[in-house]
View (tube, one colour):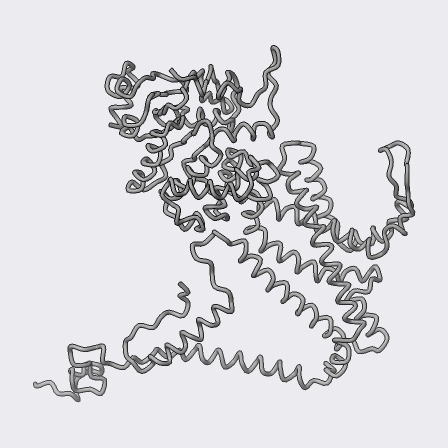
Length: 340
Length: 254
């Protein structure tokens, strides 16, 4: 019995007869490339877009958000003042906390068992106390020590001052935040320092570079690569953590927002005001972190990674190239991710 | 005969229960090249590290150009030097590491300037001019602005040698300077060391390059098990070794 096309099983069509006929042998370069179709991916994208749109629509139309009230307050003098206080608290606690933390880190790394133990104990205690508990302690400092002075340890005091007048509320808050921050900063800095190759210290020692200079010029810059990502986390955490000092009635962002909504009852829009400011400040810190990390990556890679701006430019350039080549079959596109 | 530059006398060194150096004596004369050979674990690198006090000795003493290393003698007592003074002594002793240990976050030029500027307080301009001359000498004048990781291993080691030379040391110590290099890069580093030998730099080189020892060394020292087994001119030690352990080692590496 002779085989015919209508009795052949599906897919067994003989070459040259079906609509999907393979090309004539020879020149695949002349064929049009059809990109693969990702139907499931597209469906998922549509679903997510719908959800996001719903949420955005709710934000815009739900009257409870009271965007008018948000607009009235977000740049008001009281709020901007409060943001300034938040920034000051963050800046002081960051700088002082990391300074003290660096000292503690090197105490823990020193050869002296006394220094090691003191640093270890400090870190143990201050990581154990919740920040809010510690802040209230400092707030009540005058109950603990009503006068602070300078003199011979366990001996006579030459000069002393009322502790409340020396350390105001803001001072107490900065001390509390700093001491808390220092305990965490110490471990972050220590982690960075021990991540530096031991050979670096040996080389610096063999060259006779003075000890402090070894730390400042050779060890810390290299330790920074390990320190910065975690330190960035810590500083952002601290920025938001300053909201805890509302317990001390300090006019920082969260405290002021509470005062205002306590007066006018507009809770939701005022929380939005605080949220917006925290998001903006965190974003600025993240951008700063990116560029500082880039600075300390000097020499770590053969070619430094491009900045986001350079990357965006390259992406657009590649898109144009791709568009120009869309209809030219089988010309390999420059991969978008390739930045070299 | 020129004066003794490096004098190692009865040096013992233990790491815990392990005795790595068991009484080493060694004299190196000014302007001479001493090559130390020996199997791994024989104490060669440890000896080199005791000479610039990267390791403290347990017993014995070391002097360079008549100055005790790591100690100060007053009467019948040896006072341990403070780190600051040890660091000052080390500026007279160049050290080249197996793994280069260049500072990766500094450019080649900054690597060379760092120690003269901070340890010897040289003016920056002066240190920079000297650094550029040294880079020229090791054939890397065009790499002054590069970072170490942008260089090949051989180039990095040449920079490390220039960095050690920047302090104008009385003696240069090399700890297996070519062991971390691909075979085709070994030659360029050895050429730099040979050039230094010709200009009369006092050097102690720990290496496995027998050919280099034969060509460049004034004295070859064979160490095994924490002691100097034999030493002498390269022809004597390498071709007619007196000691069984030397013969056994050479038969394996030649």
